[in-house]
Length: 421
Image 1 (spheres, rainbow, N blue to C red):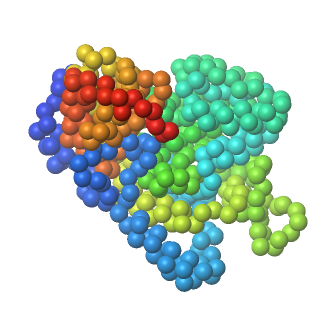
Image 2: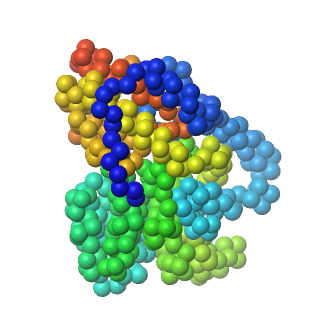
Image 3: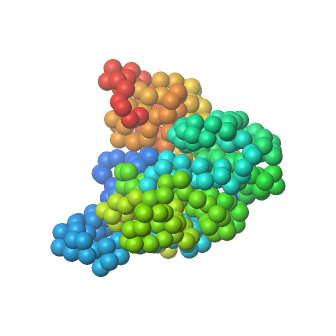
């Protein structure tokens, strides 16, 4: 990861300046590839990406023509059975993974379970899974579940800044989310992977807030294992299938504990004993959801001919303007930046500690700016460069200032907690 000190502008920008940036934006045409509701500034693509145009048509055709007309023959006629691997290869181009090292399957949680359990078997005699206190809670829950089954291992949590120094010969697996879901803080993948390998440990990266948002190069970093979701920056739709990566030289040694028929070497031989398929295919388990796979495949078209370096450069500039505007306009209301100020140490999202954060976010949504809230006090915004404009982040800051200055969040309906925050 490049070390620099790219930060937010020291003085506020103008709306005219943001409009000029949008006119000169090399990614500006990508916005037209998405269905975006009128009157809404959508800054929650790090929770659920927008609907790419063409997805509904592709899924509708699959329902009518493949499922409806071709029925069971579609598994061969339309190559349904190999679709998870083909989508995996498409995702691989966005995360620096060679063909044959990524497969689309299941959910992040299921994939984590498979990889954590398999990784521990490859490091017998080592007791520790090392993670950090900022990791996504579900990742930690899955690790706890695996440990409850082995009875021989321990989950050790340290501060994000202390991970590198905590890696020693007792560690079997380092399990981290590259970009912190709550603050946007970014781990140095290459450095931590190198340190883990020097200590003889394996590393598993969660790319939920990385894939499609920032440049990732798993192969160059020497990463062993990775998982990620596709419904955030990859815009695959609610509950879209996740993916997993296994470095090629580990694939034959890594035995999935969920030995389902889609991971079998000959699934249609219907033998009574399991024999794993070669390569990444063995990490599949049960039958995959074809309509969701087809939707994801169509959604990935939005990334055709997109340079991830250019995309991240725009994300950083969006974040810099947004941070600067929020601090200038709303710092007096108690909002403070969560996570590092150096933009090279962040993903493509911005969070602020905010008093009455939940109610503030509900008021903001009611006024046309959609972000989300993460306990205990963070209002969070996902900046998705494929469709987020510079004028969007400027206008969002202006609206947030109005919410704060007018104490619009004090209305009772904004304090009522919904199931999803």
